[in-house]
Image 1 (cartoon, rainbow, N blue to C red):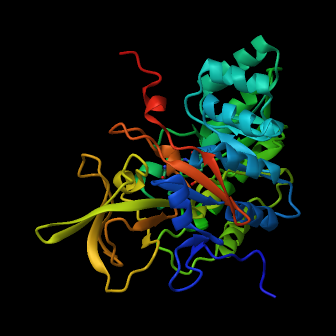
Image 2 (tube, helix red, strand yellow):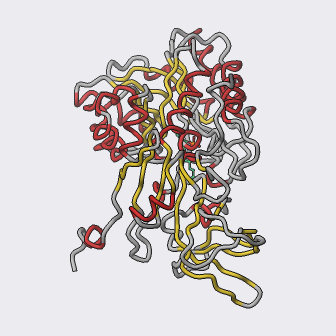
Length: 427
Ligand code: LLP
């Protein structure tokens, strides 16, 4: 029997050669007809399976997978993950409000990261009783201590250390070098833990690290944890006993859709971390975002026009950079497939949106199977940092979102209306 832990890397497929692209058994054509386009569609089953890969790989060790809410903060997805035991990594009071709205019982499994927490956000998190604050500077620790004292709520904290490890990824999403704004220089951490030891209102709970995002190899994670584990051992010798190590998020996926075995990736990643943790008896926290949700999502768009300008062919869709900004912002690659295949040879085209910017593109000089105006296309691997980074640029209402669970689709966010967009304005 094949291992249930190994799943295909995407939940979207053509059930038969002539049929429409589907999420499980649910046709994206049907969903587009029912809910309109552009439309985000997510597979709940894949999100749950991905969480399971981490939980399975860490079976036997005290651990908590804190999903990075920023990757996709849909309430339905938070609820889905919370019900399977996940915790959450948040970076704002707003994300905490989302966790409270979706799964109030999971508040005790929340860690709060971020380089600039406001007093109001700290108070909200203290009152809610989150698991721990990942503190990014000495000044923030002082503020946390002051607020904890004021509210008479003891604060558990982890210092987010900067391990000075290079991770080979896009420069905008690499965070673990001393030159980046993130974390506390690991060489300063010992002194800060020692100085916090006398304060009744703050409790050194753990240490955290996050070296960047979309990191494809396990080695930099191991290197970072090795440095963290060394710090933990030194602190222990000085009588400071940390209960948890938070290894952050950052495990990358394959956007090009080659032979990608998600279970093997997770096993390799957790093995590198476990090896570096050698001798650490406490709890391991992880903060994966992209790996859990990216490949579960597709953005379904309709082709408005196919237009030739000189030598170039442009496929213009009703989705645009405001709906999915990753290609424009990080030169990110997303596979694009027609929902229903037409006969004929692929053509080299640019796939673009209607926004008035040359940066509004999804693909440039891409070989795409033939499409005609009115056809549907699906942009793949958009479950992470897709809808979460969308905007109303060009006064475009944001897409609707559908979650498919066990072959049954459910609208989890209705399409925005012009009334939604105009509501906060004062003419
Ligand atoms: N923990 C912390 C402290 C983070 O800053 C992040 C992501 C994560 C966890 C989750 O990382 P993941 O497992 O998703 O790689 N918008 C960019 C990605 C920005 C990542 C920011 N921090 C993109 O679309 O590629």
